[in-house]
Length: 341
Image (cartoon, rainbow, N blue to C red; front, side, top):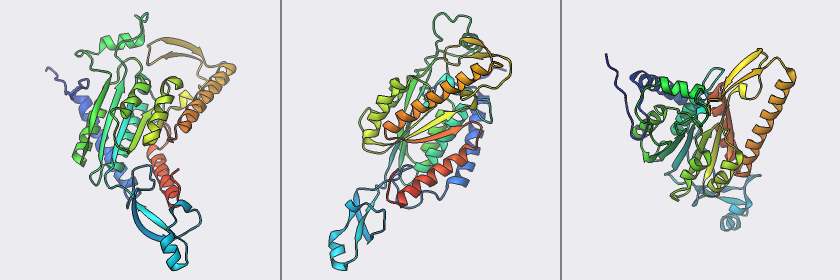
C-alpha cells in the first residue's frame, strides 16, 4: 500500500507514523505540563519572565527590598507610613520563540533526544503564555539540507539518499503569532512535524528574525544548544534583549560535556557528516575534551549573561519538567522580592 505524506505549510512533509508520534508526544507533554506547571503564574504577570507593568495600580505599605523609585509620596504624606505604588501588567502578551532544529539537535545518549527537549520546552512555554488573549508565534530553523562539499561518503549523505521525499523546504520558517489554545496547539504540531535536515541553521539569523519587523515589547524565547560559534549569535542576542524580556533555553547532552571510556569510538558530526575515530581509553584525551567543553559552555553562559537573557539549561539525562518548574518558581520568587532577575 502506498504511503502518503502529511504536510504543513512551509515544512518538510512527514510520514503518517511520524505525525502520529508527534501527536502522542504532544498529548503526553500537555498532561505533564498542565499537572506540574498550572498555578505557578496565576495573577498579574507579563510572561514567563515576570516584571513590573506600566499602568498604575493600588498602593501598599513599603517592605524592605521594594524599589524606592516606586514610592507613592502623596499616600505616604497622608498616612505618615511609607507606601509604594503597585503597577499592573499588560493583559495581552506577545511571545515569540526561536526554535533551533539544526542537525546537532538530532542527538541524545540519555533519556531524551535533544530535539525532544526542544519540543518539550516549546510546549511548556506555550502552556505558560497562551492564555487570556496572549499571542504566541515562532520562527523555526533547520539545516539547509545539503552536506558540505567533499563529503560524498559522509554519514549524512548516505542517510539523505536513503530517505525519499520531495525537494526540501526553506531552512527558516516564520509562524505568525495568534491568540487562543487551538492556535497554540497548531503551532506546536507544526514545530513537532519539522524534519531535521543536514547542516547547521544560522542561529544569528534565526534570532534576528525575532527583531524584524519591530514589534511591541514582549517575551522572546530562544531554544537551542548554542553550539554555533558565539560570535555568530551574541550580537543578535544583545539586540534582542534591548527591547524584550529574553529567555535562553540551552539543551545539553552529557556526552557533549565528557567522554566515557569505551575504547575506540566512531563519531559522526551531525551537521557536516564527517566521521572520526576517537580512542576514548586515553585519559589525556578525555581530560582535554572535558576542559574544551567546559570552556565552550562558559563562553555561551557569558554571552547570554551579557545579553541580559535569563538562562535555563535542560539536560537529556535529568527531569526537564522539574528543572522548568524550579526555574519558573525562582522567577516568581524573584518578582515577589521586587526584582526581575
